[in-house]
Length: 377
Image (cartoon, rainbow, N blue to C red; front, top):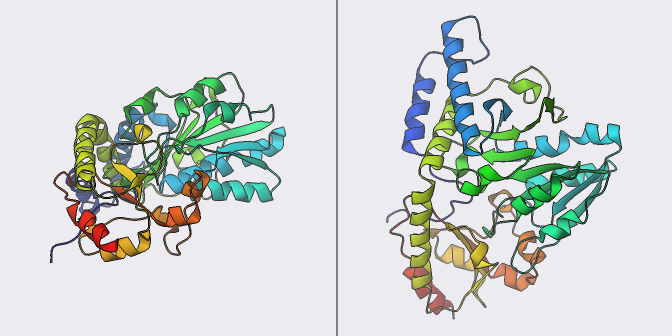
């Protein structure tokens, strides 16, 4: 039997062959450590890493020196949040604002800081799946250290009003962090948003797994007072010690370059897949979780009343591969904290699945799903 259609792009995307070819040279070529400054191999590696840094920076209109390479968005989120803790303690600014629908890579570091005496406020979201920017801003105080808001939710694809929040925060002293794991290289407007810290991940844009970045903007000549979470070297401006993995970094750079270059054509292709999905499911009762007008074109969180989401995924596993939420919390099923925060009941959350697509799924058919749903009923 043919492999099932892959529809879990929000978890990870296929590796772009162009990124693979660029990486292969570094995997198969001479040894390369970008920190070895005394010979030609080290210099070549450094040049390749810096070129990739420029490619990543260009996506969000940042300076290359503002890009810190990490192992992925989870580490970037941790560095952005936990890295500010010492500054918060030293200045008495121990209040942090986020939202109830953040990824666990944000919520769990915040829970850790709460145990250390920080005050954490999570702004609620509406049934549409997005936060009211005024509700975030009204919570800002003189002792607010950080505001952290994702750009698009990984489970629903709903865009959050980070631009409005950023504009309001310009008049305040709190730092602003955006978890852009799901929008970096996908949403053109990201480059026009004023932020202090931004997390990105390579494997969400057809790059290799295991590499990401934290963009740390400079405030004039002043660097944001981040402290490293690990110690053992001065790489990445002292914020992320350890040998920079040249091949994955080069692959990330290539993926970022093509994501920026092809963003409109990719969005158009995703919109076509979305139209096909709705056409095939038109005769089946369903509900979209979240405001569809604010949703990214390559993902949908959909509920089929009376049909258990886990049972549906198992029944379709030979033809379609999709999920019911974050891949980071999929080992043991619990109702999605995102959907519950949006006002769904536990039963409604259990009836929901996330379908996400991208390059290569233009001709995907969803009539099998519709037919099976008829059988379920």
